[in-house]
Length: 244
Image (cartoon, rainbow, N blue to C red):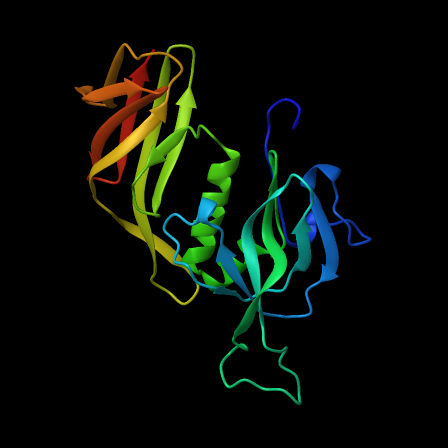
């Protein structure tokens, strides 16, 4: 898969085998066992710091200690606390504050293989820290040099791309789920997006770009292999059609 141009992302204990070692040599990491701390701190390296402050953001889930092997690159450094909270050591906050920036990395990129030493996806699902999502996105940007879509829409925007021999169709869905009951998220209302910039990967200059289903022509430019346009989504759904 890697030899054919694919990329691989592993996170948390899924990156290690039953002996606590890296599953693949291609990960380019040196593992030093599980972290002795239940809470650590994430420092984004400058290469993935877009939109992230220079700060140690707490990671609420434990992981393992690793360093980049020769030729691999650290994307996120690990800060460690003064001590692990036990019966004889206590911090009045929900976690012990950061003491120092350690020698370990939380994210290592080796070619097209990215290893994250903490369960960052599960941590985001549990704690919803926006910086987790931003770090994941910036790391993935290092893996995928030409994503299918680039846009500056809100996080609630969902996109689906359908391609065939003659066209590229991009569905834009803009709805926000709200917790209306104790157990259920409900989607009732569209979230309007006005004048959103979007770039869509297209291998050839398009013959035509329009909005469906009313076939309104859409102004665009084509450069660097992308169709660049500005569009609005006012009723929750919009389709951009690129004819090739």
